[in-house]
Image (cartoon, rainbow, N blue to C red):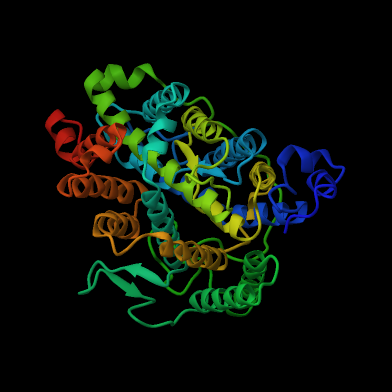
Length: 497
C-alpha cells in the first residue's frame, strides 16, 4: 500500500498537527477510525463504572465505608472511578501514543474489598495505601528498566500464546457479561449454557442477535462493524425494554431478584441525563496505616501479591493490543514500551490515591483496536468519554452489558487467529503455549495463565537440555510465580489470610 516517495509525506501529515503528533496516517489509520475505535473501547469497558462501585461499596473491618458516611457512597465511587480512568487513559494516549485504555482492575479491586480491608483494624484508607505502595514499587522497576527487561526476556511464542489466551479470556468475559455462560453452583456441571441449557430471556436474545449482526458485518468487511453492532444491539435492547419492561436482574442487595432482567444497566430513559459528581474518595489513602496495623512483613507479602498480578496483567494486555493493532516489531515488542509500562504503573498509584483501587490496562481495548484504532488518539477519545461520564452517568448507563458483550466475543475471534503462528509440532513449545492459553479463561486470570505458562516453559526447556537458552530473568520470574501460587499458605502462616 506504500505510494511513491514523493507522495508519502502528504499522506503521513495531511497538513494536520493531530495526524503528525499521533502518526495516524503513518499507522495506516484515520481520524474517523480513531474516534470510532475510542468509542468502541469506551462502550466495551464502561461497565466498570457500575461494577467498581458495587465491589467497593461494602464496609471495612471497622464498619467504615469508602467515601465516608454511614452507608455506601456509590455515586462518589463511580465519579472517582470515571475521573481516574479518564485521566490515566488520556495520559496513555497523549504520551505513549498507544491505543490502550485504563480503569480500575476488577481482580485487583476484589482483593482490596474482600481481603485487604477485611483484615483486623484495616480501613479503606489502609487498603488503598497498600495499592499506592505496590504502584510505587512498580514505578521503580520501570525506571530501573527491570520491568521492560523482563518483558523482552519472554520468548516470542509465549507472547503469541498470551495474546491468544487473552482472546479466549475476553470472549469468556463477553459470554459471561451477557449471561450466555453462567457458573453452576448446584448442578453437575461447572458452567451452564444460558439458563440451564435454554435461551429463555429477552436479554439473551438481544445478545445473540447483536453477536450475529456483528459477525455478519465483520464478514462483509463493513467499516466500524463492532461499533455498529453495539449500537444496533442497544437499539434492540431499548425496543425490548419498552415493550416487555424487564427491569434489572439484580436486586438492591446485589443478588439475583429477576432472572429475566438485564444483567447490567437497564436500557431506558428516565430523569436528568446530567448530574453533579462528588469526589469524596479522592485522597482517601494511608501509607503508614498498614505498617502500624499489620507489620512490615505482612505489608510486604500483601503488596507483592497485588503487584505481581498488576505487573503481568499489563504485559499480557500490551502484547494483545499491540498484536491486534499490528504495532509489534520483529521481536514482538510494541513501540514506546517503557512509556506504556510507566504510565500503567502511575495509574496504579493514581487509583490508590483516588480511593478506587489500582487502575490498570484493560484488555477490552482490543475491541477498539479491532474496529480500527491504531494510535493514542483513540485513547484520548476514550479518556475524554470517561471524564464526561462523571457528569453524564445516567447517559452512560443506557448501554446494557448484553449490548456491549458482542464486541468482546468478536475480538476473541480476531485474536484467536494468531494461534497459527505457534509451532505446535514442537511439544517443548506447544505445552507451555497451550497451558498459557487455556489457563487464562479456565483460571479467569491473565496472570494465572502467564504464570503457569512461564513455569511450564522453564521445565520443558530444562528437561530437553535447553536450560541455557532460558533468559536468567525468566528463572527469577518463575520463582516469583511459584511463590505467588502458594501465597495462600504463606499468608495463612503469617496470620494475614
